[in-house]
Length: 190
Length: 323
Image (cartoon, rainbow over all chains, first blue to last red; front, side):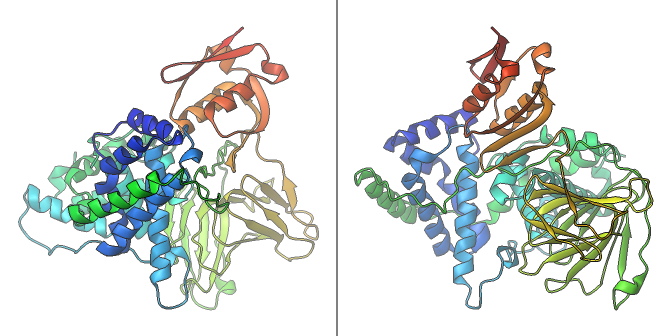
């Protein structure tokens, strides 16, 4: 979803409301990769991620006439994937369903600690330090840093107060900063 | 995947509110994490599976209009719930609670004056503790027993865990299930009262003695427990003058300059509103059910106070002008 502008999403949103099938196809083609990965981020299961992706788009077509043109279609897609994925996980649990927040989102595999620092290793360390973040904080940071979503949009997607989103992202950066200070202080301005 | 090398403008307001943190603290980790997107660790989707999904979607879109009966449970346009707290700057001083209330040695966290302490509670809740405030809770704090004592002021984001989260102040008890809200309770000040302000979710407030009725607060509502009359119920407080709500399509401003409302609409809908300073400085109280930016602006131009205002669409939003 890197090269997609707000205008592009607005255009698709308006066209969807008019049942424009070409727009529907285009949205899928442009976003399936990121949304699939976002679904996988929760469910950690490829089959489940495909199910989530399909469910989200089926639902999108179903409610296309009610999509609010004043609201970001991009943020809506993330919200739908998130909700669908979490629902999926809830139903997949064998024992009694706990609150949504009890569902653990496992981070990707953690790389080993290494002594030597170069840019590639730095990135490995950063990935590990990001994985250290508590679940919601990691997600808020990721949505902001890599998906180009505003704090308000993230608040809508994750069902948090915007202030909390701010706090999470700043705390994430502070965590990373303290890790950098401990391991590679010359990367930070003195 | 989208990636921005510099701190986005979202941070400006936060940095302004937290002078103890500078952009230099946050910019380097922001910049350095450019290539560390967790989603890159996810597997790439298999083209064959994607094609299968596309085929299914094409079939669905082709079958008539595909309009299923509307499902009322689906809230696609759920707006972020948000209340702006423009009350006077946080006041002063605090007591440290004696450990009588908890069976074990309690944990006490204090925020130094002028700073804000962020606390991750064991159940995943997040507390933003204002300067000069103290939060105390049992070490055994977990999803089954969630009690804490607050002296001062804090903003809480409480995770849903099936058991109530209980906050005690010097004269009131606040019970929540899963929500975000603000509590002000400075015991040793002249105003000595507990004020609870709810941003999202549902909160119940009683006096400490639990005499009188409990009061239930929903998003955007507030309650006040005065120190003097312990036997009475908490009083529903008027929302602070600058409160506004995005809640189930309700837009509410109480005696606010239009400029503040325009800023909020701009941010919420990601549009731009052009209006002169004299228009922006006009104040208004308005409460309306609207779902789109244009409908909202039309409403703003319709009140007795703003009858002479007109609006027109621009490339990026709207322009508001005097007739």
